[in-house]
Image (cartoon, rainbow, N blue to C red; front, side):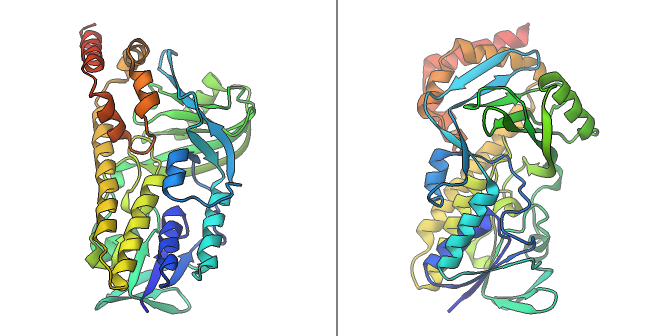
Length: 382
């Protein structure tokens, strides 16, 4: 029986592991941290449709709050409110979510070793030798879910994510935001030109507040944002990490070493979120390798993984387009959103994960497109 090693016990690695265990292959997950789900580095906002797509563990004890929409704040304070008029997303505890995934893997017969770092990997013919420090492990396949470092990916495949497209982020868990807990808030600031600030509410009082930028002085920019928008909050917890806003990578099945999740840049470049889309790719590639080992046709799963990958690639191009819009035009864009039927279309066709597919449905309306184009031209001429 084929042996599969999964390096990393985050969502991408565990979702892949679950599909492999489901088909009865010999699987071992190696997680360098002392326990699954810690430390918790994530905004934790996931679409309800996405949770269904990845067959999220049930009961959903890890759900902390439900979200029905978003409020966008321009640099001058103009607001555009997008209300789906139904629950569309969940704010989750990543610790709880990851641990339930880990429990599913172990119930299916997979082994998970925490506090074990894979120091190195060597390709030996069609198998791999993993250096675990005090011992070694031999595998026929490797799912590389090591995260942003992608050190092993660079060695084995001589490729990685674009290092320049990782953006440092500070996220606070804070008390006293005082805003409607059924909406997330996105703030576009002139001093945060390459990303946005956000509030993701956990309840009426506590929320996750984050800012990200590649510019120097991230700490000072966070203090400025807090003083402007949330001067009375009490900080309960603080974490620092990085999000990816670059182009995703793709690895063919015949490599037998398959990077997934952050290691492969399988995230939405517009928001840095990757649990759902990265999870879909990892699940399908894990299913594909499993079916191949069982003597079945893997191509259906590979095609589905490629479909999600293509969506992420298009989202990256959307991100590049957005980066070319001067932040001073955001006021006009938000006014445009108010004056056209964009909100109605987003309510009908919007998808937090398949963002380009949603936009394509919206632009099929000639009337809406004409309003968008004319409003943008007028704002550029001002």
